[in-house]
Length: 212
Image 1 (cartoon, rainbow, N blue to C red):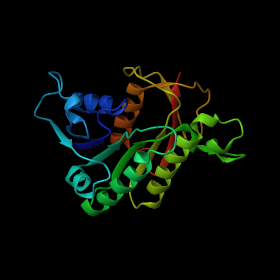
Image 2: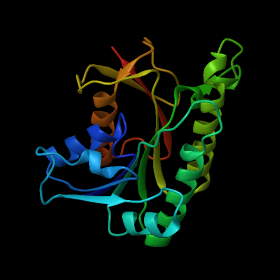
Image 3: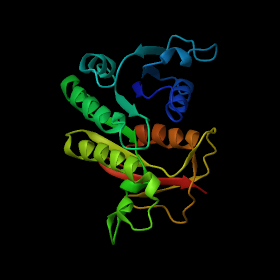
Image 4: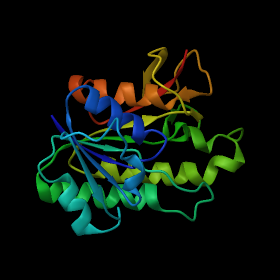
């Protein structure tokens, strides 16, 4: 399998890259500061690093062309001024359409999940105010995915901790998982995304995820 990873040097992206290589995938790792990804453990012939800007149409088209699956683990600030998550996804989906690539899995946020009373979790009165702006960014990214003609899965984690995969996590389609713990290891998000890329059980779905 050939995969492209956007946000390849970020908290979740670096685990997607490492774990995809461990599975024997051909990995195209995309980022602005991609040099930091290269070390003795990752320097092999199945890894292609692509230095580029996620808002650049040519860079992104080159990165997605010929891939089977796209992973987006884009990050950025939380004050709402950084549009990397939303406009990055917009450009990725547009270039995927041009390249004829259909499958994308993207990291979002817990606020984009369904809420029976308030429609979305970030609309709840008790939702932390400090995360409302970044949740709106995640939600806009979700809207771009939903409006596309792609086979997408939007993974919605709570507080992400840097750590290897434990495989001790639970998932829930469209809603917050129950029982709910407000944390998840980055490696476990990568573990779920890579498994979902093979199983395709949550096409055009949001997925809540948290640690057990």
